[in-house]
Length: 543
Ligand code: VG1
Ligand code: CO
Image (cartoon, rainbow, N blue to C red; front, side, top):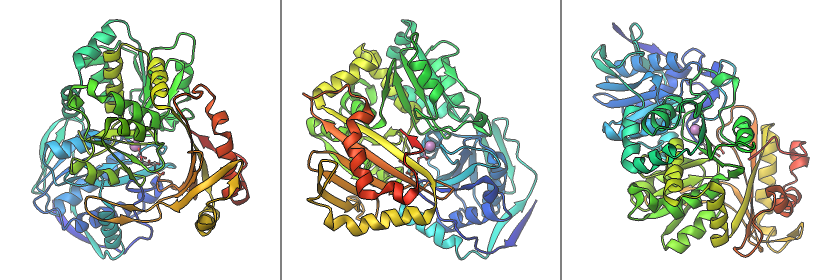
């Protein structure tokens, strides 16, 4: 073994977005690309000498090669120990848990989450801090700044570490510990939920269909749902993680999880359907014949969390990202607990969770989680749902209808316009920014604008500020449109249009969502001139 200091130059564009650095896989495979970014992370946290790190990924193409490189660089930078998931696998929530359980100094998670994988698809890399949560904006800013001035990186010349078996070996002076990726996570889930009640549910013939989408949750779902909780073999499908996710798009929504939707809307549909994404932090919940919108799921989980042992004492508060519907606000109001509105991205929940201000957090993009880790957690949401279904003895459909009858319904949808040329997408947003002060009082498609702004967040815990987080247009009738550009794409820009319309408890709750939202959709088009800017008359993906 030999330490090397390799001269390098800054590489343009190593700027982390909503959730780490995401690029085309071939970009990450360019000489020095991965090495530069890794060294920038190490330098931005004042080195890794003597530190303990967690390392793993979602198993996509290049995961295994990147792990070997990062291990050799950690060794050359003096790390004391790196704990790696067997086979290089760790779901994002499991990595967050390991950082906390092992009191590590942080962790690197290799994933482009819900983006497709493969040599011509996407790869990604994110750093989580000692609380187990995604790097804060100030840290990602420091990483980007460091990447922009890098002149060298350190790496060890050594053979590959065998990732296939648990155990400890050395790389130079550094210890490499390979651990079962599921064990600690499964133990945590057993502590949070009433496993006996869920076991009894399955024993009573309750049928589950979990689609792991050939991504990282396969081994987790198999172990927890089938082996520990007794769901029959075959309840978990597509449970083998594959480097290209079987050619699929591991994004759990009605478009990309079309098989699951078909299964749950068929005459012989199981009682409960669910799916997760590439790195296991998202969840999709479907009952027999009913899709649960993620914003509604957050509200239902908040209203029913006390059925699970971990939350039996009540919730400290709830946080949601700004574009997420306000269904959870209504629950928090009724419970008399705090509700917080943050910018998009899990990193903004970290301070609220650390300070004990909130217990549950959620995003409209199928992310829900709690203070048990510092990431959103797909299987956790599935287990909390199962715990609630077992405790209430009702179907998903019954629970949703009862919820709307009590709180009213926030009809909700997100329209995505993907791979729009960046200049056109920026022009659309810039034009809206210029219009904001003129909008209040004007009427569009029969809706009159009450307020319009560009969302800015003041973190109540550390006082940090984040501006320009999304255009919000609130209508007098309680409807809302939010527009922002995605920070996770790798091709052009993705415009996200979030549409919401509230119908009180006494109103109709069974309209098709598109129909209920029709005036809001029309108003959004009139205000933003989406077709004029993007050339598209309809969205590419509707969730
Ligand atoms: C998207 C979602 C956001 C989520 C982020 C990371 O970001 O909208 O809610 O936190 O992905 O999720 P954006 O900037 O593309 O809208 V994951 O599961 O991709 O790590
Ligand atoms: Co994800």
